[in-house]
Image (cartoon, rainbow, N blue to C red; front, side, top):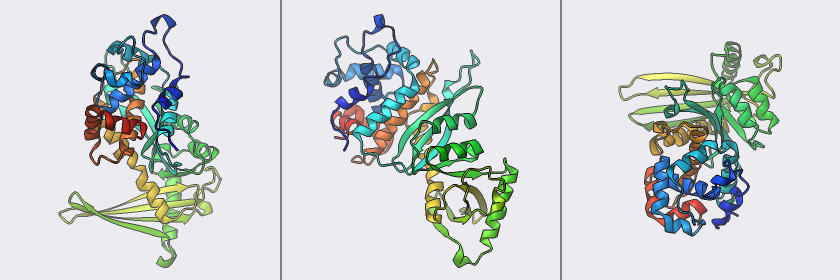
Length: 375
């Protein structure tokens, strides 16, 4: 069971390496991190706003921290988060969140990338930071993220991210960019199964999968495992059909894709308000034979990383507007935003949007503690 004690934050961050030299330690690292997390949770989108949150909530923060030297200044927050190791910080945040929240075992994990558009520096010729994130679809929880090296791309970053995730028994979904043999092998090595989107950037595999799907669809309708949904909204109707078939030998004749055993397809038939209809098909390879209904959950769940994580970060946390770009500061602020979003989504007593919940955290100490400590 999760602990309700705020002391658990100190427990999980106590061993985090402080990047500062001893003579500059006027404020304990735990103070800087706790105030930053609470500030972002309560609507702060910049280091200046985090500092002002600390000043205004000094008496509340004193209940949890030794604030003998007061609230750190804006530059202190900036310097520390610019030098703090993002991977170690994220690991500590995840361990703390799992200690204070009921976190079920992740069955569906979506992997996708996002660019922090405001982090580019035209003067120095520094490109915007691009991050690859892992999102637990059912838990609505960020499991990890990794900054993509400027000279690299998602194809090399995804295996590194997978290497630090607990994937046992999980289904990992990745779009066509991540449909690579090495990535499929890494998912299986870590104990997970994959559902990978296949597009025409891999023409041979695409044609082999499409042929296998066409062959499967020629069976009697009663023999096809399919799942259908019918949704209406935004002036259109969309009927989606999902189907899964065992993969014939022709899909991977040389056995290059580790444990590939099934192929899947989704057909989306959209009808707009003017009665115009379009049909789109998407193809997938799978390492586990699952039902069409489970396949539908995996495919639909993958897009939650866009709708429930990336979109929310831009709209509710103004992530794309952030001009923070020194050292690791942008990555560490991004880590805090993702976990703040997860905490806010998991708190359901307030049935409002994320921006309203952040405002409520700013105004109500009781609600802030409920979100932080699951009280």
